[in-house]
Image (cartoon, rainbow over all chains, first blue to last red; front, side, top):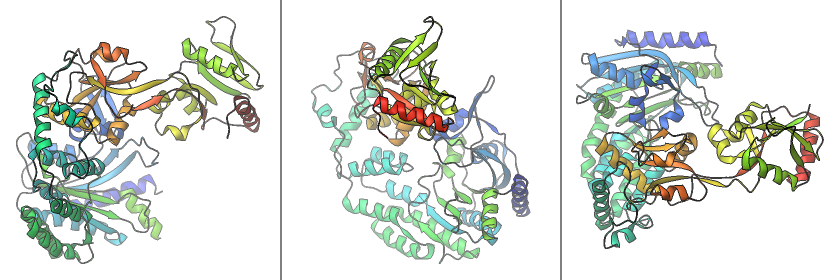
Length: 362
Length: 232
């Protein structure tokens, strides 16, 4: 393991690198209000973040990532466009026996810029690649925006699309729902029987709690709609599976996606964005004929990326987590912006992993 | 040094534990007055009885301050992260059965599975502006179970007692609690979700992986296991 002082030095070097490229250095508090993070990530974050309590603030968390506080800071008082860099500790509780560090440094670079999203994607990717250049890392990329577009384009009810989109980041649950909506798996037990009752609302127990009778009636209507909805057509399920299963280099994939867009015209705008990004990457000198693309990449990370996603891996050290990860999170700015939004893309580097890779090569 | 066996210090759990060991030729008894919380063992030399609250036994095992302990399998899983790295299950003891279940109002005719609960949680959040509340004291077990089953848009609210009443009091929409007969659930107009409990708990004899096991301690353990009919 690299010395703590060496890790700090590496973080300082990276910070200076991003500042040298025009980023403004920012700091965020270590203690973050828990409510925002819980509402965003759900209860799972409790298992992964250190929760503490403050007599005045209430529940607080030790910063599990920088993105949320940086977005909040920018939405409150940032001028546009903006480029930020930061370095500091993040804290991740390891409940399972992963034996990963519960506390480590991150150095990040975030871009808030409306002008040209494809160029901003390429800028963040290529700056990270440059900062880590000598390490010879393998980059993997994906595009959550393509998946969102493909799901939104399915021939089915809005409710089913919403359910699939909501679980896009939980691949197993997503699969279960898709199988059911496409008629490959039966409806949950008891559902048909409930809908067949003369009065489904009838019950021998009084209704207790906050959820009202109207809400129950509404759900029964939703279940009726779902039971009557035809299955998602086979060819669309196949196209979606095809998209999720794609593993190719970025330049090969561009052509493949254009073919897919012929059968699924609704994904054409997302495909155009992909191609614009590929061109922007190439224009910045990234060799896209050797850049990997994985259709499902980014589906198991924290659920805020909604466009370009990427990670940098040390092939000599498959035991290590990615040295850097990043992506586009426009929707997050919408959630945190209370009415305003701005296209945003960013990435973080873990300096101690970068040093471990260097040590391994020495 | 001797091998320390932690046993619940009061109530039916203590009596049943004493009976279970007694039926296998290891006599556990309180020494002195009943209020003294000191115990004695007959039948295996080098085994020392330590009387503790059942809720503290997981922690004592994980700290290695006791070598063996009897407690509910639910408490070990709830209180210890990566529990199976810290303790090993030697033998389920066949009593103290209780299921940790998730229950919702019986009048929620549209909800019978976790799948329904997840869909309702999404709709509830959209309408009420906060995540559907599940009252429980089993935070870790419930959270891990719901994550595994892909349930989102809920929150756990802590409830250390009278959990079944939280729904009527509108401090929670659903509960997750231990039940043995379901009587209290019915009385509070709640029903259990289909698909099996979150965890099926029973009193279990655990071995600490963190305690120091000397050569002599291992010999005591072997003899005890032989006496109790526990195979390796």
